[in-house]
Image (cartoon, rainbow, N blue to C red; front, side):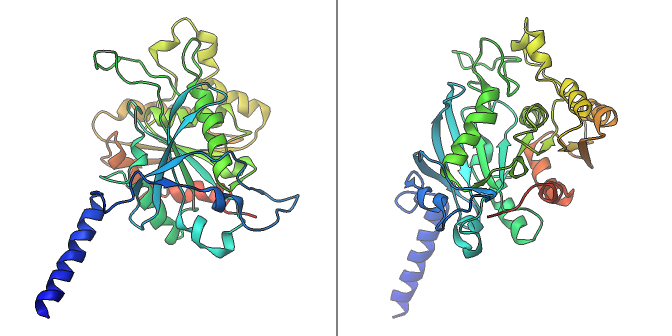
Length: 347
């Protein structure tokens, strides 16, 4: 009897280990997953509803990983109808979206989470492992009452990251923008990716339910997008962002470059008188961060007024990386701040 029980316990333990490390066949990674039923809700939608049921068509998703609470991260390949660019998008929705009866017909807020670095062929937020456990962190913060239960959309940021020999392209990134003659990455991030989420999930009709977060060049793309399209997006957490577009691909396109420059967009928004946008900045004060902090300080000093609402958290000893930024979204209060200024689940 003792031998049978011991063998059974070892078997259960081994199964759990193999599932944790996603060793086939003890994992559902790669399996198809559908959000169609949960996206439609289960009741009649009032004409004046603030929620938007999933519009379709349904995308083809497969499971790419799991958060610590067991919720699933999935991925699809999106052919952007407006940008013409094809790339991967990872998505995650909290358990409240699927399991809480009081939210069965509610639209949920969305954060478009953008990585730093090349942002291609993967978005590192789409894999809940290592030190950048975004999905697990959001799930935890929701339970602690610090965060709204955001749907996360995690697209690739750039169309490529190396040349044909596999070497990095110096200065070859797209600033999350439609650079003439290049893939329309601005349209991809602000039109095609939101359309994908609207097609498959219950979302919020108004801009109050749409925001960005991002690191480094991803932080710049989110910051620029909110200032450029404040009718569509309300807020951003920009971690260690560039403040001006600086890709070498802008050469010869000064007019278009200016149209994607936060230092040009912010004063125009102030002059128009709104709508209000909420720009949250995080920056470390560790070695090599002084110039970036100076640029952020200057931007806030000049443009943090009127409809441009800002918050700055300086991370003591912080470096320019996700391992610094993510935990400080909690300890520095940034996730609670953006949650206070965005719309929570609503019918």
